[in-house]
Amino acid sequence: MQPRVLLDGLAMPESPRWHDGRLWFSNWGTREIVAVDLDGNGEVVGEGPDGLGWATNWLPDGRLLVTGPELVRVEPDGSRVRHADLSHISPLGWSEITVDGRGNVYVNTINFDFAEFNEVLTSGRAPGKIALVTPDGEAREVADELAFPNGMASTRQVQAAKRNVKKAQQTARRKRTIAKLPESTRSELGKQAARGRERGGQAGRALEDRNRQQLYEIAKDENIPGRSKMGKWDLIRAIRKAR
Image 1 (cartoon, rainbow, N blue to C red):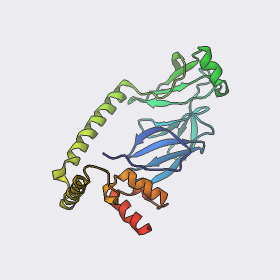
Image 2: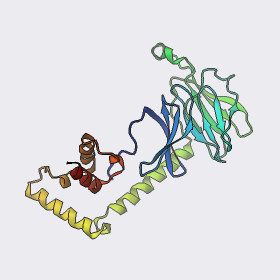
Image 3: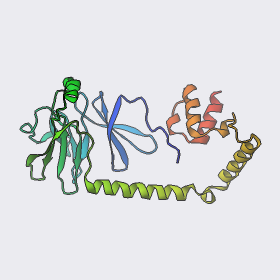
């Protein structure tokens, strides 16, 4: 499986979430909530707060939650309301968020002014907290004395993620089987292997001998538009056309 670039030109992408067939993330510094599909089609789908450290997640009914100075809920009509008052737990804003299948919302806070970052971490203090907001709106502190709380997941979410990774790996292995590739692709792979043997295993300079990442870098140098969405052979055709 070859990694590829889906989107570039981002400010500071953080807190990725897979939701409704797309990867959603917070683009810190731009106030953008961005979603991108596996073909690299990106879309700004919402607005986040100013600054850094905020994240998104969803209630079981599909409504979006956004952290920041407050925990905010986006209603179906697009209006925004405070989901729960957390000021009695910390007045310094909220960062990462996870939601379980029952609708319990967990959010965390570093619980100090970020301008004091070095001072707090070198002092040995651990002011961070985690708060729970139940489906009936009750908000309470459930953990404290955390140095710098960050990404969170429930035990069930971790278990589900491991199952999904294993399933994806099994699927990828099945799809990578050469016998399942189109005949034209198998023929081309054979030709590439023959050229490799003729070179004694040394990397060649022909475009066909490069992997997709190497071709992507060449396309980037050639300033070829749409390169992040192209496969290997599309990149080869585009590079040759540009030259």
